[in-house]
Each structure stands twice: as structure tokens, then as C-alpha cells.
Image (cartoon, rainbow, N blue to C red; front, side, top):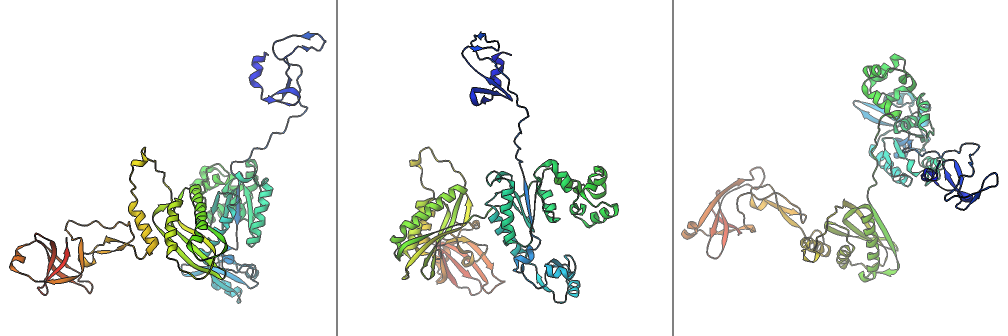
Length: 533
């Protein structure tokens, strides 16, 4: 074999001046070398001297899986979310199912008296007369699962929040946390301290991890080749979602997942439905099983402790600017904008006040937020010394990328009006500055309402309305010339359903000086001035 044929196959330089080609070590020398018989050999290129084959094949590194699912099942979550996790009394959580009250989760003391999930509350109280029944609160359970998911996000961002536990994809975090056993030990130690008798299962597919955890089978399987043997003994009833499927599985004598695998797929789909075949394929990793991942709710809270007590706004300005810089970095990292922010001031004895800074449009510019915060702090009057300042933001919106213009200096600021409104709200207060929009009512005095600046309402109809509408119509005297100038009559009869009915004929009165809007009350015949165009 020539050197030109060997050269492209060289993988790299090995120790002692050798070049590695697969499992063959070559000694490369450019100068003249001696052959085995001692005769010198001249050549322009390297020569093959010996072939160093290892006595045994090297161990190939184990490929890391693309996905590795960790299921955390919390069997006593309904009890723990209500604060009854460590109670020595017999307690059971129930929920209303139609006309009956059904037991959801009994604690261990209740189970010792024969109380089981699924039985009615009346039967459970017959078995355990001292049983304490508590109504289930699903909102509290979701809140506790959310807190668990926020904590679990320190290990992986791929988290699915379930009804009774969590599902984590930890394949991408194994190397960071020292391998499977190290990461699994950290998560097990954390959840065991927070929950009562949790069950953890680590499997290559999400469905297999969930079924093993719900079956109480704490197992760790990281290889797809060992998945089939690990799930064969699981109850086949766990794949059934309908009572009819449960009964048919019992009638056919199918007890385990392995029994299902031995049946023909076509016959299984025909008897039990195609959905159970699909769940079996997801269980074994033969069909995709996408999961909806939990997204952490955006929230920003950052505090600064003052080196000395102070009450003046200039003293707080450097700390305000520093916190706003942290906020801007947070907004850019998460590609979001802030819609509203609060400044919380605290003293040595506790919280003092909360200062809102409203925005008319989403923003993340530090200088703009700083100017609005300065205006808001100008109205603050406190005699108590301030020792701590906190910036809180709970309302965000997604940022949209907008390309800049070619000539920035020629572009006008389209948000000048919004900036003025924001400055007025920060200086005077949000309740003082508001907008006006139209609402659906034919009566002129009730056809408008206060709104948030920038809010869009109904568009005006074809009838003309004056820009200046008097708060209360003023009486007007009718004369012959006055009546000759009237035009564009519009009759409004409305409000018969409430306490303010009107029956009016409106006219436009135009003179050389002014154009007014007047009406004649059809009930009294009196004329009134109601607006000026």
C-alpha cells in the first residue's frame, strides 16, 4: 500500500512519534531507516516499520441517550397540598362525582381501616367511623406542582407537569451533574424530603417511566435494549383508559404487558381499539410521544440594601439605576419586554410603601424607565428612613424584533404621545390621566366612557357629533331666525329600559361665528344647547 493511500486514513498523532490509523500504530520517519536485516533503506516518504495491534479490542465509549425520562409520582399529593401529609389521624380526601362523593386519596391510617381510593365516602365512613373527610382542592395541588417544577428546573429545563407528579428529561444534564446515579441521587434526596413516599422511575420513554412510577416500581433503565424486559411484567390494565377495555382484558385473561405483546396487532386493535396499540408503541419507543414542557412564569425581583438610611430621592437614584440595569439584562436574556413595574421601599421596621410605574407600551430601555421612576419618586413623601429598595416586575410581553431605518436621524419618534402620557401618569398618578372612547349608546351623554390611554373602542357612526359636549344641556331661546338656521335633524329616542329615557330631535345651528348642536325635548317642547362643533 502506498503512502498516498495511507495518509488520508490517519486519525492523529499518537505518543512516541507514531501516527494512529484506526487500531494500527505506524512509526513515521522522514530520514533513512534500517530494515530488519540491517541494510539501510532510502526513501523520500515515511515507511511502515511495524504493526502494533492490541491484544484485545478497546472498549468503545457508551453513547449517551438522546432522551432519558425520569417520572416522579406523588401518591399523597392531594393530602400534602392541604397540609395533612404527616397526620396520625385517619384522613381521606374526596371529590364530588355526580351524585356521589368518592374517595381520592386516603392516608396510611385510613388504609389500615380498609379505606381505599374509588370507594364512596359513605362506605369509607362505615369502615372508619373516626375518618376525617377533606374536600379535594385541585388548585392547591397545581400550585404545589408548579413550585416543584420551578425547583426541578435547576436540573433540566425539559419538565412536564402532570396531574399527580412530574416528568423530567434528564439526558442533557447527565454529564453536568456527574452521571446518571449522581443526578438521580440528588433528585431523589430532594423529593423525598418534600413529599411523602414518592416513587421515581428512570426509563428511555416517557410512557414507560410513568407506568413504572404509578405501579410503584422504582427502577433505573437507561438502555433501549433493556426496556422490553423491564415493562413486560407491568399490569396491562394500566394501558386501558375505558371501563370496557378493562373488562375485555380481564375476560381474555390478559394480565401483563407481555401478554399484550404476544397478541396479533390487528386482532388487538379490532377488539380493544387502535388507541391501545398506539399507547403500546409509545411505551416501547416505537412511536413518537411528544411532551408539553413546563414554562417558568417570568418574574423579576431584585433588592438592594442601602449603606445608610435615607429619605431623599437623589440618595436612592444610584440604587434605582443599578436595579434597572439588572432588569434590562434579564429582559434581553429572555427576549421579553416589561409592561408594568413596582418599587417597594422598606425600613428597619418593615415595608413602607409600594410605588407603581405604569407604562403605556412595553419597554426595556433603562434610561426611559429611569426617567419614569424619577418622576414617580418625586411624589413620594415619607418621614421613615429607607434601608432597602426592591424592584418587582410581574407583567411581561414577548419582544418583537424591528429593523432600524437606514437614516436614524431622519426618523421621527412615533411614540412621543405615549412618552408624554407615561410621564404624566408617573408624575400625577395613573388614576388622574385617562383616555376617552365611545361606547354603544345612542344618548350623547352616555355614549362615551373613561379608558386606558391608547385603548381603542368603537368607531363613530355616520352621524356628526360635536367635539365639545356640555356635561349638562343648557336651556336655549327659540326665535324665528333661529328656527330658519336649523338643519340635519336627528331624532334620538332611547333609554326606556333604565331611569334616564330621552326623546329628542337634534339640529345643527350654524352662524357666521359658531356651529352648535341643539335639541328639542319632545316631552316638554323646550330647546337646549348640548354641544359645540
